[in-house]
Length: 307
Ligand code: AVI
Image 1 (tube, rainbow, N blue to C red):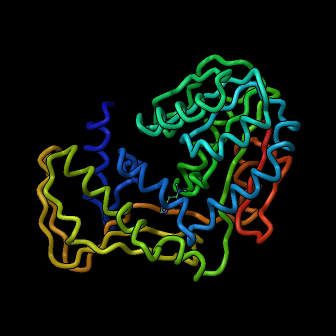
Image 2: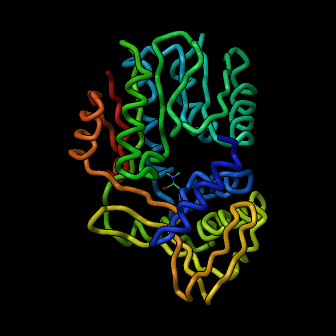
């Protein structure tokens, strides 16, 4: 399905259910990717700093445990983070960034090539949720899914994703998975409702994507950014709450949406994990978590799992 076709069907499906929902993959146009990069530098957004801390300390251990010759990165992250693994793995190394956003892909590839001229890069423009098809590349391969992006998948999507990773892994390959851990509500809420309003702009950007791609007439100023901690499901939910009754036309989806004042659109879930839950989700996909590291404050975990 084309990019616009996929957005159209997500909009049709997501706006006709209650509560209304838009899957978070539509955050990531060029502006969304830029805002998401800015989020990782916010003082309140501890997951990025915690993950960086673990990678800084454990990159050498990850390199010696995997001896990877190909580094596959799902959702190409900041080149700084990836650079730590690339440096530790040494050369020769093939780097395979997989991302839905062309600008994120080229940005990551160029920055890494500038620093590591010997690197072989095979960029893959794809939505990892449509199954993981990787180019032929030397093994062992290390598939990295960092940034706790796995937490943005719903439980069934997460299970399907882990199974697709398992199917792509050959003996000797490994998965490196970054996951944010359950913690006190105040820390979580601050991370998803920052003082500078960057997360709010990131959240509202999905409306601009729908406006541009499907000719819709949402006014982002009609919505408030809401971060909600669902203690039962142990996940943050990002929502857009209508400040007044809103009627928006979405011609590209043949739809007119009427929202009540106060009605919310769920735009993202961000699951937080416990060690045991993580182990059992991996086990359900026939993945064996052989090593798990956390940061000094125990906020975040990186797990190395093998088939
Ligand atoms: C990309 N992902 C792991 C982020 C998260 O924390 O769930 C996305 C994000 N949404 C708001 N802030 C960051």
